[in-house]
Amino acid sequence: MTSANLKISVLSKNNFGPYGEVIELKDAEKLIINQGTTTRFNALSTVDVATENGEPILSIFEAQRRPEPIKLEVMERHPLGSQAFFP
Image 1 (tube, one colour):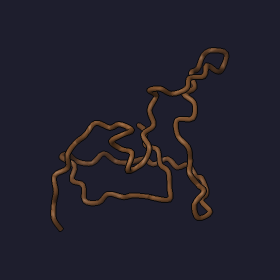
Image 2 (tube, one colour):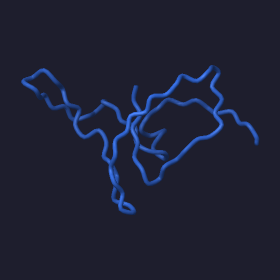
Image 3 (cartoon, rainbow, N blue to C red):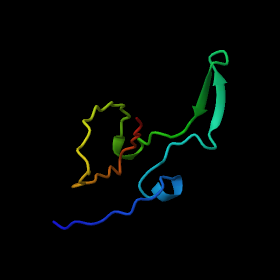
Image 4 (spheres, rainbow, N blue to C red):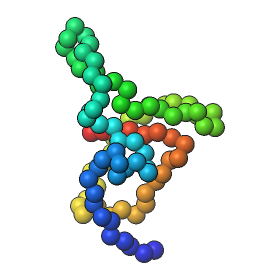
């Protein structure tokens, strides 16, 4: 197995486009709801389930912090799934 250095880039819709979708509030449609107490940032992403009889699911993962410096040994890509990651 060979190692490689990764270039760190700013996370943006353009930079990340080939890998998926970036969910961000910039330029989002804002709807004021719940008697004016809440702002809904509308339709930030879609769930793509059209291919191969897909089925939408939502899961929560609780992860353990990795020791620093982080050593990446594998990266995954899920071409038939949409995922969202947020703290």
